[in-house]
Length: 216
Picture 1 (cartoon, rainbow, N blue to C red):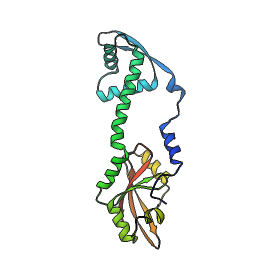
Picture 2 (cartoon, one colour):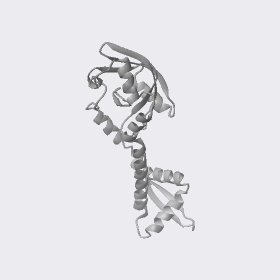
Picture 3 (spheres, one colour):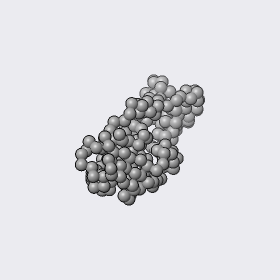
Picture 4 (cartoon, rainbow, N blue to C red):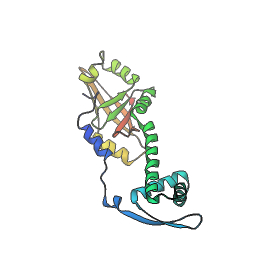
């Protein structure tokens, strides 16, 4: 059914998202000459991804890449500067990832749904209901005569009036936007229709949608 654990192939989908394809330009070292505040020029050869990491660090900290290089060199004067900058870039990136995981983890996503006073759900790519809140359950009990929670896994069907992949692509292309679409649910001899407002879920594990029932 639509509520419960993800299907086995979800693991493959998650693996594909975790392991991006490497391109030749990702591993090709790039040479740059960086001048310090004292005028000293340092020739540094790093892969593009590390330069990108230092660039993001520079923008976030509002300091120049040259300052980052100079401060790193001053911490370990006898160290291999290129290696130090690789470690620094990766350490900074991992720190940002940890912060993002705290915000976009499953526990926080579930709490966001539970904080909504209106019926709300989280949908996976294959239209499985990953999370739902108490107002959603109350709606099911009233409209679909749901008397046993086991019916959520064995008898409930849920559908939206558009392909899930199309909705995900549209919202991923138009970040910050939402989409209002029709939905239908049925359980046994009871059915209901309405509209749901969809937005990209703040989740890192895999692509999901947050849905707020707007009318039923």
